[in-house]
Image 1 (spheres, rainbow, N blue to C red):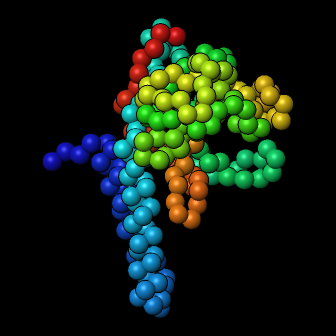
Image 2 (cartoon, rainbow, N blue to C red):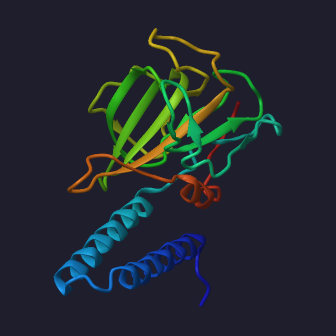
Image 3 (spheres, one colour):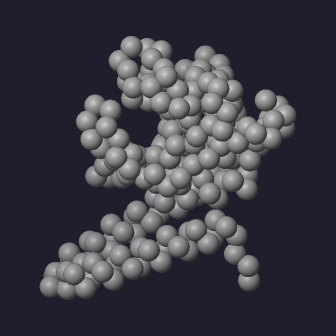
Length: 219
């Protein structure tokens, strides 16, 4: 039986969880059985939350150009790499870097169906839009050059709908601050737990899966 890419990635995540369970058991063998059960229950809940992300994934956020073969994007697994604007902290996302350094050139589409939860200016994220998916996952698109339309909180979004255009906005209190870094899309993925309202998840492996689901656009 052949497995899909998504199945392989989910299998890898599952194996990682199993390894983690065993390490927890070895490291905390002296814990009462009730506490060990609590650990396993918590892990199961996180597994289910990760599974919800897979259910929402439809399209890669940057369509393929039909007019320019050089209009490519690249990205690496920069999860928790140090960022220093306003202090030192880990990078909660993946940066998709523009091969053509032209702000407003690359269209950005919604990965999933959902509803606009946040839109507008953020000091770090610049012009950004956040989509709450059908499975309660928050997809965060930052550093946009502009929006595709006048989005409002509560607007219904369809997977593949153009949200805006890749840019270099952010790192400034003043709205419209740009040019502090190269043109790119910062993608963040957040899940909601009983303990943490917005828990960041590494988007890298989800993006690798979505590479097989790219839209094609004329730009």
